[in-house]
Length: 466
Ligand code: ADP
Ligand code: ASP
Ligand code: MG
Image (tube, protein in one colour):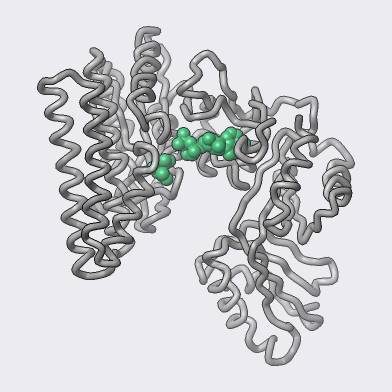
């Protein structure tokens, strides 16, 4: 008997039609004799809505957050009424969800008085989306005769207290899932677990970062020793590029953990970048499938890569990033400059997405997200203030409106000339490449362009992957 963890994303639980599909998919797996665990995201757009009500409460817009909560209430109620017949199951589910929303309103009132929400309070409010959808989906499964129960992942996933992007404490999380969740699954319960959230040792609710339900799915798959993790989403699988950028995008049958890790890190929203982490060593296969197209086999992700007819398997892009250039003739030979620049960026809480240094050591380029760019620039300038005063370093230039374009394919390692083809293609289109870096895994090449050239660059390179 196999154990299968299935994660359903926001669109996959975002409507009555979608949840009806979730029920059908789950029933098939159970009928096939498998043990299943579900991990769910909030209904589509609910997480954005919750972030919105926090903002409105901070701005003392009481009418604003009350009416937004009312809309969420109606959306969930509509789903409950369509998915459940009148009776105890429907009443209890409505009661549980309304109670959560009442709590959210209470917290908003408190924020309204203080005009400020701490990161801890923000995570507590944002967690309501998944807590509602887990109850909704579990009730829909029960309504259809399955032995299902909703669980808040706060009791299983223990994290540090970096609210907004908390990291799991692996050993304790594993112990809790093994001791308290696995026995339920083995008894035939179909648990519906909240994605995206965890809690600190002291019980404060945390979130794992936007899109983090995929990561939650992988954590549960790993520690329930699942035979497979299925990421159910709204496209047929991992594609050669974002179908929203280029409609010619095709589904890739097979990719490796490493390849998909690069894809996700460099912008392919279909999987959260941390998804492969928990399942990598255990080699739990991941399948990405479409909740709305059951007959499509989707994409299989395993440790092995499969050679593609095109060396480049996929093209991705990251928007809303800035380029920081630290330059100066006197940088040559200043010991540890690169290290100090990185440390200063980290101190400013700026994650460096890409880095390169010119061979003459006269310039260092870093790419960071827009919202962190100014802080990173000031942090680096402060760190190098003596060198700047002595004119060894000219300063730190900030160039906004940048995009990173990445091509991925493990076949690149043994194929000469891939970089040449990529940059010739850019040259032929007169796209100006501002900076280049090759991934350490040697299965990706990333470069920076002006944001206005992003579509053209992706479109052109995508042709090499088709
Ligand atoms: P979910 O709510 O199921 O987690 P997401 O919206 O987070 O779904 O991710 C799925 C979306 O990712 C797709 O609708 C698609 O637009 C986008 N996407 C971006 N790049 C890719 C890619 N390379 N392959 C497939 N989908 C991609
Ligand atoms: N609901 C969360 C978000 O919108 C997590 C997820 O969907 O993966 O970011
Ligand atoms: Mg997602």
